[in-house]
Image (cartoon, rainbow, N blue to C red; front, side):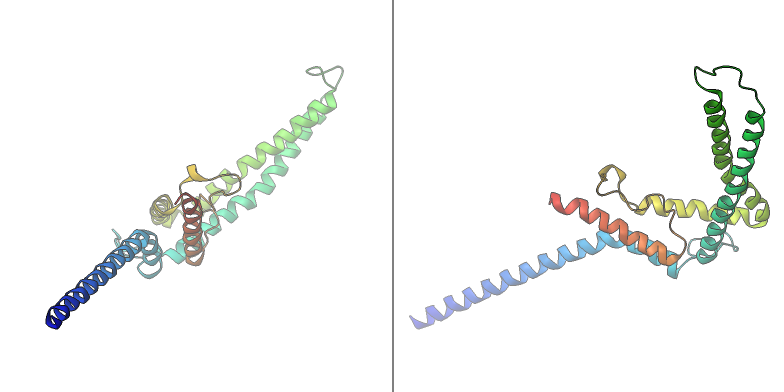
Length: 209
């Protein structure tokens, strides 16, 4: 009788151990699945930082740190030309409309108001044309490396599209952080941008789970 009880106890312990092993295996599989889901974003940051030349087609691929420096200089050129073009638009509009004689109403309003609004519109037009003019000058000054820069532009754009959050899930209280990557000026900024996209995704998915 005691032998039967001992055998039954051994079988019970074996069954319990088997159940424990099964639970541990399922937890390990879930952890591996979670890590594999995060792999694309982490791999993107790793490839930009550790392997900037991986998968290049030509020998003169622009390094990522140099690309970010050039990208920042382009933005500076565009912003710098916005000021003079705005002043030119203001001066041109003020010179033209200021010389007109207001003998009557224009569009049913006082001529000073209409001409003032038209002058402000000329200034706004100069402000809009500034980045295009600055970008044109920048392209002329970097025409030798323009093909490498444009190639990196396309590659960087694909990184953004692949790793940024879904804009359809944003709200007024929770917008997508830097959707177009305009604040990215270095590899450190890019890694921070990846973390911000991950935080946004977790914030919009956790309440639904």
